[in-house]
Length: 120
Image (cartoon, rainbow, N blue to C red; front, side, top):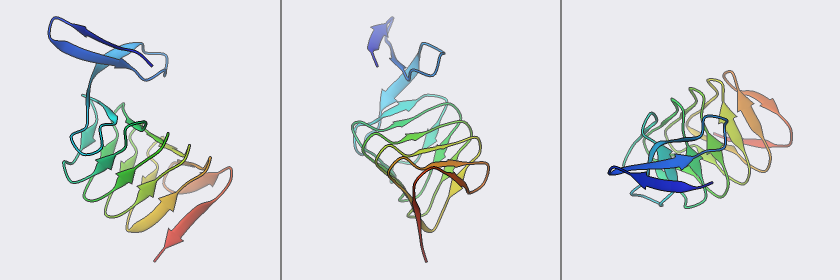
């Protein structure tokens, strides 16, 4: 993952085949956020985590470690995405849900690989 600054625009390569895109470091945690994604100031995006494409991270949600959120995903409330987990293709975590390890969440809670924890 590389970052370049050209003509005042910061870009980051999320390694999704699109090359460098306009992006910035999130103010709460320092992780990379594409300018096309929507991340609340109250959400946390850790320094190695990434949110890109047209993903939404809202409220007090936490994206930590090497987690990735993209492709129309919605993470909200107090949900957490940690480890090497991926949430994409309109996957949704809300409430106190947590995806960790190498979990993949796609298409509204369909879980693939490893574990996910649903805390109620």
